Length: 206
Image 1: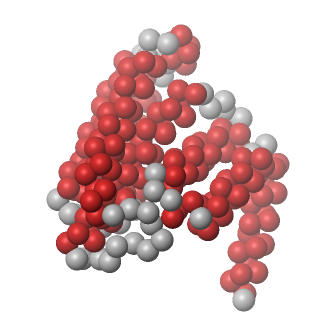
Image 2 (image 1 turned 45 degrees about the vertical axis):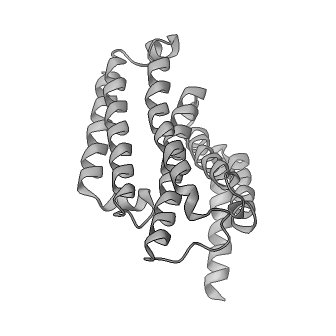
């Protein structure tokens, strides 16, 4: 009971801080979307993936509102392709574990083991799509205004793409048994790739 009250208090405080920073409406939509996902949307094939991508994009919008930094459509598109690939990787890994008998098929999901091939194909397309978004963004006038050397963005995006492909390689080998984000926070290669990407983005704006 104390945990419930503490969660409620922290939620109210978080909402008040979000309102003060201008991100109140984003948080409200995010909370409603999360409740809808947990209660119903996650049981629907494909819809659950779109809902996850939407929730991740709302986090980007919330960050932009809180820091008073405009979030462009380019950033949302780039983030959406990465989020989609990671969400598909998680679903594919779950189905892979179910196929080998390591874990039971997740309950309240609309997927079957046979869907793994399609999910893998879509996940790889989404990963490649992230690089396509960058290729289209770099010649854009907006990129030229924000970055003195936008070519570094392409290299940074290449590192992100290689990391996504590595995640999918681990999924195909049956070596990814957790959320890709949780895995990345504990994986030295992923952390090193993150530092490299941040460095390249810094060089792009230098």
